[in-house]
Image (cartoon, rainbow, N blue to C red; front, side):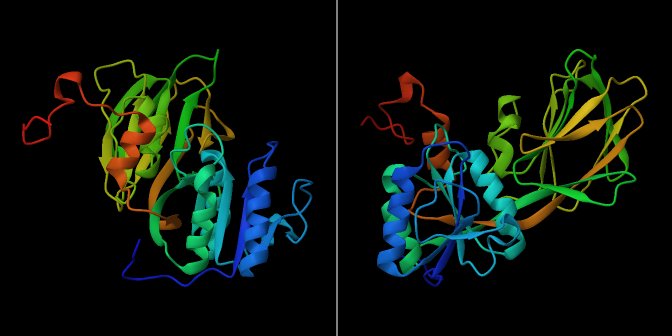
Length: 302
């Protein structure tokens, strides 16, 4: 595959590994490739699975000086690798060693050619957007690359929420909660809740009510410069707030949150010609109706 803006071949990579999984075969492939090509390997210290020749580092400095990050696992591993890599501006190659692996670029059988592409520079880098969650009164933002979710605590009743766009009320409703997704994350929780598929190359925020009690049950797509405000109303049960499936904390009635888009917040490695449509069909199992399966889009029989 040829690229007009060919990046340089990598000379050092950081490895991010799925916890508590036998990765012996994949790690041996990576070790042998690194030894043969002279590419330096680094990984988080304290992991007994690491082969000889890998530089053990504290996680906080894992990506320092590396040209790319290779995530060996699934979507959760990929998201964790993006959180580590994004502050350094280096791209992440996701290798699926699990089941779906929608966010990952290659599976285990294509690991070797993907590594060769990294070494030779035969790959492309695509930007991915993120979301920043700020709680009123807090001094820090939490960054997500898939989604931010406010959801009811099981057994405590419904979440009663008010959604605002740039300070203007859009809707108030009782529900299981609300999902704010990046375009990349539109294929995760938001998709399962009935939201749209959005190309990961797009920008903005997908806002999806989760099982609302009321007539308003549609997804809303905001531009990259619009901000989503979420107020937990006085009649609400406690809610939890999550980032990319990770529990961050809980909040009571009266709490306020703001979510803003972060364009070009992270980078991923792309190898091969497949784009958004091919990936969606393959990994989400999209199929054509039987009546159309033998015809192309112009109506000609195949």
